[in-house]
Image (cartoon, rainbow, N blue to C red):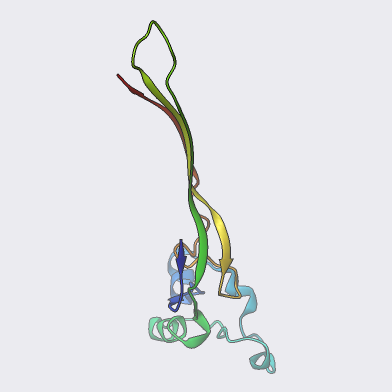
Length: 134
C-alpha cells in the first residue's frame, strides 16, 4: 500500500492536559527553558496556569505538521492448494497463512512517525486456516 502527497498533524505537549490530567509528551524535554533556546526548539515554554488557546495555537502550527507519504507492506498471504486422493473422492484442500500490518517500508516524515497511527505501531495479525471443498 502506498500514499503520497498528504500531510498529518503530529501530537505534541499540551500543558493544559499536563496540569489537569498528567498527560505528558516527549516534546516536554524539548521545550523553551532559557534565553537562546528559541534558536534550537519550536516547543513553547511551560507557563502556569496553562492556556488552552496557547496550546491549540502551537499544536496546529507548522512544526507539528508533517508529510504523510508512506509505503507499507499491508498483507501477505501464502496458500497451497491440492487434491488428495482419498478413496477416489473429489475433495479439494487449501492451506493458507495470512499476515496483516506487516510493516512500514518507508515514511516521508523525518520524525519516523506512522501517519496512519502516530501513537505507535499497528498491531500485527496472523491467521492460519484450511479450506475444504467437496
